[in-house]
Image (tube, rainbow, N blue to C red):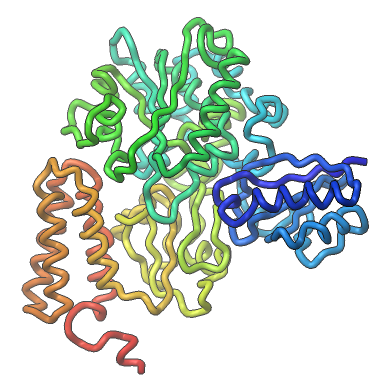
Length: 518
């Protein structure tokens, strides 16, 4: 009998020893003459339990974690006996943290071998493309629009409208661009899906190409993601060999091919027009809009630009139908959102659920509160340019409009938790400093406003004309929000103003909260 084991090759798992654990299991098995087969998967997203090892049983896959190299011999003994072991988590699908999720986009992540096209197809892969080919462009556009899918990169713009605009544009060539420049703090969903289910991204982009009439696509990945680059290149090669890319893509009448391009680590290249500049071989600088990329995008041609998660959601919509996707969520936020829990949190990882779960549920129940055991003081949602929410706002539903109504944004779905030791004046200063460092320099509000912001917050903390300088910061934020060319300068006011509004006691010369408590 051969033991079939599953060990993640996801970068997060590799960082805490997954490769070494896989090798230790092989060596322990050889020493004991136990026949094993190790399948390297993506991660299921339970990062506090990584490396999480699973083995196949008639009842399903049983999980153990977090596993170390030293655990390998005893783990094998447990697998060949009754399965009893201190690290045993039970059936993977029954783990409460996983069972509570609604995994539409991440259904295969951590389950299949991401390098195997056969595994992908055996778990429902390419059914969406098959249906898309039978429907034709107009019906594809209607399905995506009816699903209510909105851009998962942060802006939340309706995907169907964007695609329809490109489809209606007259041009001899059109492009599909996947923005995989995942630079927000506390976010890792794009990386997880590219490393754990790369064919899903390819399928989504191919469906988009058929819908709008594009013949070429690019996946722009940040250089800090070498594992994702390797996984996507391997999947593209496999898809091309199988006829899913290249000439007569999937038996379509038009060809479509993909190429990976690697960025150089500039945060501003996560902005779509800066990304286009970089793809064209120039420095990543924001373009003025209009014209929109949908009309005048890559190399001056109509271009669909969507985030990894946006493309990854499309195959489910085409496979199961628009209504099946739209049945999840609330208001104008339909479907599911892969939420990333990070920072000072007990259970950090990826949690995919329908829109509508409250921030408090995510932090306290699902995340388990702080890892430090201290009270949660602030939660930043939406990356380094997201607003800081205090506990008083934990009843906010995870929904685009609900967050906007409270001067926040959900962005790419990243949540970073801080306990009561955080200094919010320093966090506000960091936001301005981050903007100053990462600014492309094209527009004055972002370039100069952020630099003046750092200086003015320093004055406030030193106690220099606090009221006047707070007014200056607010004025700078208004100018940046309304006058910046892109979201880098336009969103920097969110963390700054929310820190001033909800944590005012951290600004100024008065004793800090912790000093006062001592």
